Length: 351
Ligand code: ZN
Image 1: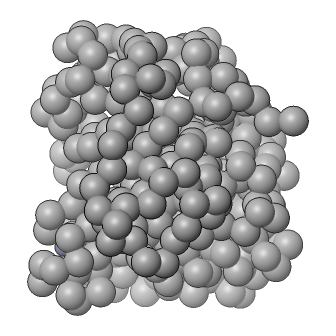
Image 2: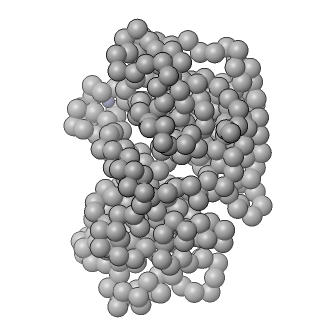
Image 3: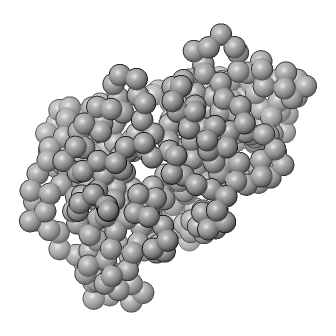
């Protein structure tokens, strides 16, 4: 038997349960989970909002950001062995549909996601299809191994087109936005601005390499300040990771003519904005980002970490046992929200 955090009931909250250790398919490995991270998207399931009710069918073990050691290998698995230290993309892809075959497998037509469509990583053990595995070096501590997936999202959001020598504005102060500040800075951006609303997170953003941060609750208008700072032209690149309707509008207000906006944050509902001005007449390039390219973005992230230029550690603010999962979600959703990334250790705290 193993311990797991499961969405059992169709109502707010989560359950700590004891369930059998899962068996694996021939093309899967069984992972002993060393570390797994809480994601903002899991808050939907915790709260059991409309999105959650449409997305998952309880009972489901949550969690899609993780790393650990392989303890069992399926009969069809050739490239991995017991004892290998791995992480995985959260996306489980078919490899056969037209989209996969065009090299966009991360947005596969038959996409499944850990902790949504199949059992997730808020557990002591987890089956992982070999096609989702990304091998890790033991130089990467487990708490970093557990956040490779969101760090990959940040890498994709920033580097879907080059940022070297370019000015970059990041909207949002959630963990992925904070990672994005680090990726932009590590990649040689000319100047990195980040706009958020939690003071402690803005402090982390500066430690990650943001040159200038703005708090939307302050009287200073960030859009006007950035326009002034760029002689009225606007910035080269905007990465929208807040998902607030006003942030989306401001993203297009602050980008220069011919610049790029990455849309990554999800708005709570559809919004209206002026496409003529925002995109067409100013020839702005919009790049939607969902997940991360498998596997060139992972390779790029691997290189950024190995270079020593990107250190995501400042974003990890809490390390907790699996049993404290619900407390973690409370920290993320109530009070001062002084949380960056929260990492859980289902098989015992490290060291
Ligand atoms: Zn596919």
